[in-house]
Length: 365
Image (cartoon, rainbow, N blue to C red; front, side, top):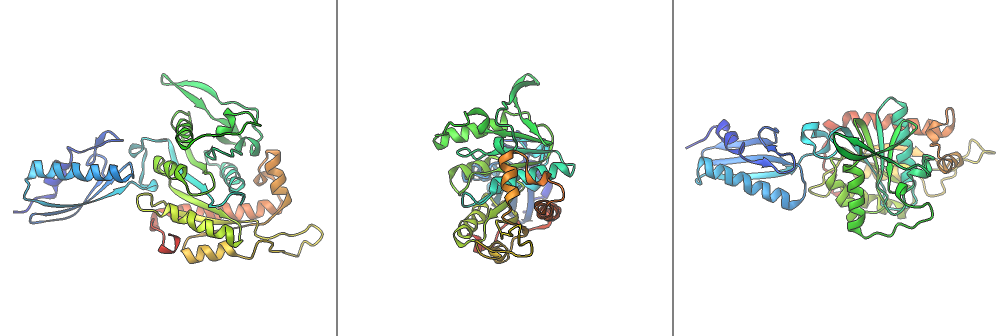
């Protein structure tokens, strides 16, 4: 006794995706791998990548098939999370108006992650994209300073009868940060649950509107908050920032590994080498590799992930961040030349993203 693929789909149309509130067949989340005799093999996608959610989906699909088609069928089901680049607006409960969410991460603090995130956001906005930046660095929010909006406060607006936070806008980028809700000199001392709750409000209770890119400035490290964020948001890919020194590269490797964890499977768009070298103004032809040479480039090659380019240790980049005017706005400077190269490579990798494998090599683990 065999069964038609349509009969299988009809049975599975009784299974509702819990987050998206529609049946999994209507959402095109089912792939019939095999239907021969009494053996059915399926791939089913689920919105929540957590293991318990995937197990519940597997049990629901098995129950639906056995109830409709009979218990004599042997059912093998592989439940996978919906990846960021697969999520259309219909497949999104979180931020349905955002095309791509880009996580900017670093395993180690102090390597320039927020500098890269802010310049990436402003650079993309200058290229005509609709861009938002979510400063998710709960314990060290820097976006208000880097965008010169320290004294701004997001206002509350009414959208379809719901009160939402309106992001602050600067340089064509919509910005939200926990730094807007704390005094400049106030230390933010929160436990993990409080931090996660605050971030969820900035994500879900804000009027982000339609965006081409949301740049997500993650905290340094690879802890519980990081996992909560990447599991809660449909992230398209990650950019890893590191300096070329060995101690930073070891943490960068862990950062790549975090995104490769089963159930997360977020592709690495590329790696940026910050503070790659120093060139004194009086010796413009000299390069001094203070933290080592090409360390990030070599690590990217080893892990088989793209290399987006180097960013030298340039005083004007630091001054621009402190002044609240990202360096990518400074036309004709050496900093802009390097940032443009990184932006060009980023756009290229985003075009290639649908064709790349999502899993990272074992070397990243």
